[in-house]
Length: 441
Image (cartoon, rainbow, N blue to C red; front, top):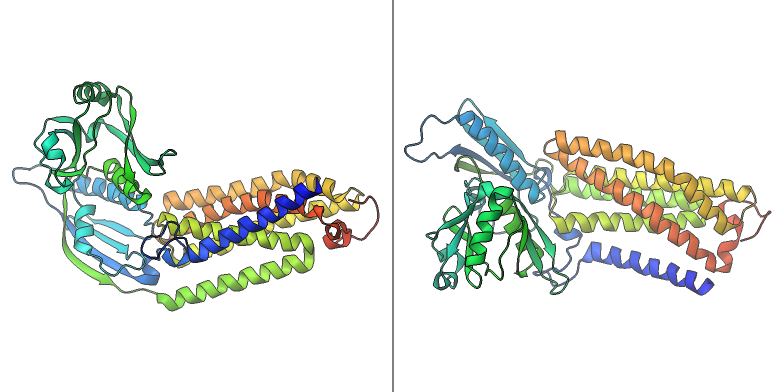
């Protein structure tokens, strides 16, 4: 039993050390990261700068009587969804109804050196009419951008419900998961039954973005495209399919660079403040709670590492308010540990063994921790839904941090506390801030 506890303790130490190493150094060569680290986190406009553009509706000839204000409002919502899907929360998209135009500010990507803002804006403002078309076997062998959009239309954007990505456990590559509305099931079943062994092209306007081979008849609402997709490639294709239709194409008429409002210096100061806060929190926990404080500091390291890994590998842009959300979530994690440790001390004073006190302490503290975390997550969700730009980014990092702090406080700390009792010194009650006496562990 003791050996098993010792194994769990050292296993947790290895996991925490591995998370910290991955968070700060990443995994893989610099130009092809398998897991991205802290240096790949995307920073917001306030830190790195970005681009500002004015986009106007580009109606085709013969289109009259459109409600321009309504089209622009709808386009703004879809553009926000497209950028949210890329993790770009630090943005500003506003409709200038007086001059019938949209004004947009978006940040540069991290380590971006050859960014083509007009290309990005053209893709962002394209109508993206989505169609699934028949493609001849000969055309399917061409590069995607050369496949003509001349085949019969099987489905259009109105038949598509959603798209996402998932990993194929057999190959390790990613699939693009698609879901149809009921209106598209029969049409797709007829076409795929007829085209088994042949190809169906997915087009945005007249540009082919994917041309999968039909392996079998599909007569359900859900199906997937498989291939040698990386996570980024699968997500990009799913996003194009999911947000494929603006009511009107938007054309950039003015594109300017935005200087960083605060700059790298402000980021460095915020990072230093976070490090100082982390060190002070750990010192306080160790001095006041002793051995549990040491273990809580280890769990807090895991919390920070998990946040960094999430932000770096999802591409969520981080602003100074977002960094504030991370620091605040560290305090939430410590708050949970304080509640747990006080309950453990109460159990120890009542004469219970250390293992029994740890078990009872976590049970008694769980409800209080759950309540405080749920209320904070509700606030974070409200900030995300109703907020814009940095406020939305703050909501994301706060909500993520609180969720992860709950996991590390209840899961990581509990395993460490229960498994450390395998060592003789850890069964000394003074290491828990309680005088000797009563039952022994």
